[in-house]
Length: 358
Image (cartoon, rainbow, N blue to C red; front, side, top):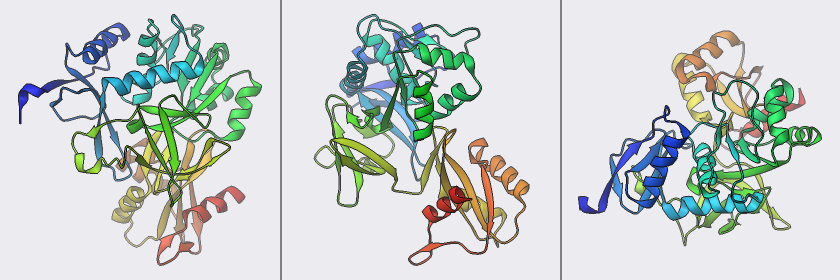
């Protein structure tokens, strides 16, 4: 390996202040400092052409170290600011963790405007008024139902980006009734976060639907590689194939749901197959299926269907202990048999409809 063409990767410290973080990001972007990593990244060096790496897990549970050029990061920030009408001096607030691309994007957008965001992640007292902010549906739900301080903050903003999970239509309507100007975003780490706003692509972004109904994306915001799994990063004529089903109506993208067996709950990916695999270890004789149900708080809530009698508390505690709080089911259901698609494949959509109809 030609180390002369490599640069060191510095892991971003969660304890850094926003000015410290902005200084390190600037050094990474202009090339007079190390590249920065956020999240779980184990690679120590990378090509000089990259400025940032985001560690993220996909449907297989494999940590993917997603590498970005300076051009992609700046393109995303500029396109987002342009869409919402942000101009020099506009202020963003940071309500998202920086181990995800969404949190990093807030800082990048602010820097492009010549400002720094108000850091509200552990803020006490009344939130300041800002022009723009970015949240996940869970935060919006809490603002509308229990957190009046956050509600006032969102009402004060010109635009509130909501992404990371599906936004229930009734939640959006409730927010708009309360005077919050919502823009729903769609994207993933590989697209430098949200790249489709309210169904419209940002500048420099294209979307297409393939023959299987799966969404494809290409454009200036795209990542360039998985550092630890380059063989898995496939672009065909620049197109990145997502795991989501969609359709385009009147020029607007409509996301229909995941094409694989992963749900996004509270802004986090959760593999339904992993849930079932863990349960099979502890309860080898139990017939069960994990599935997601649309939920205004979580985006998608984890539910478990079990054939026969169940000990709900035991199952819930076991999953939470094995995979963390994200794996604690929001509902456990006893049924006579699992609905199937074809040869042995569980029909998760039917299970979700059964719960919604209860």
